[in-house]
Length: 308
Ligand SMILES: Nc1nc2c(ncn2[C@@H]2O[C@H](COP(=O)(O)OP(=O)(O)OP(=O)(O)O)[C@@H](O)[C@H]2O)c(=O)[nH]1
Ligand SMILES: [Zn+2]
Image 1 (spheres, rainbow, N blue to C red):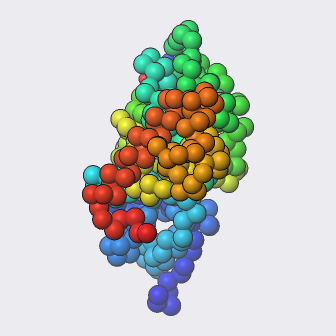
Image 2 (cartoon, helix red, strand yellow):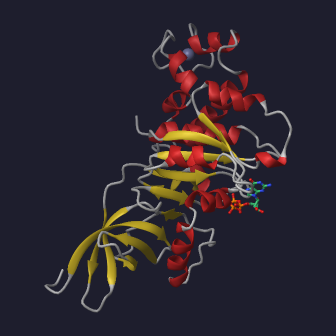
Image 3 (tube, rainbow, N blue to C red):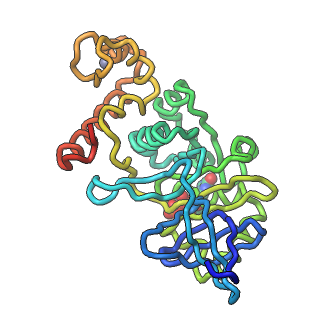
């Protein structure tokens, strides 16, 4: 750093590969370039920036992440980080058609893996008079909060807004479930301002290729809007960790005879007993087995990926 350079801190609102929009501690949002080729900032990253006399701003350092939301890439071998330093995962679903609940299991498993709080939002409740599927109440029984909303009609938003206050939460879910609509409603007028800022950088807010951290006025934290996906798969997780990513399996598993029980065919397995007794839902158990097998396959195909 030369004498004329100054260092300040900030948080990345959005990253566009070669540059990023950063909310700086002096209250300004700056478009920054990125030093070197190795730094890959994502929305939510806390960064150090050097400011040059000519007004140029460069991200020089990414601070250690408290959490990172990632998805599988590279045929399962790699993790693509979507956002950093979030504390809450909001899994948005909608009826018509109801999703395959396995995607919700996988998002919730990711949240458990990361130590994030997790909740489910059922949006578009104005669309259906159908009874809710059983799996939704099963999630509630497990302790995951379910919020029922209509972004279109403005229903259920106060409760959700109160739940998310002062948190840094990422809204995730399939394309078209209403994540952006919810975000607009939750943010109220603030969103227009965020939009202007990102448009100035030449990247519209609706560039759905990158996650964007939206600040809630007068609050720490914010809401991270990430591009919709067709499906979600967890980045590589060591298979022996998978039983800990399903709450009820983690709990029941403490009663298994072997402490490295994978709850598949081991003798004295308390998880299989609980499934037989109806205390653990068959559907969730099958979902657990699928995730376990997926991670075992990734491990077999990539020797050394999960060090012993
Ligand atoms: N009926 C009804 N329609 C809604 C509701 N919320 C959103 N929509 C509509 O659903 C469509 C998709 O909404 P978006 O907010 O763009 O969905 P998204 O999840 O952000 O989609 P991606 O950006 O593709 O991930 C739009 O036509 C919205 O108007 C709702 O509560 N009820
Ligand atoms: Zn077991």
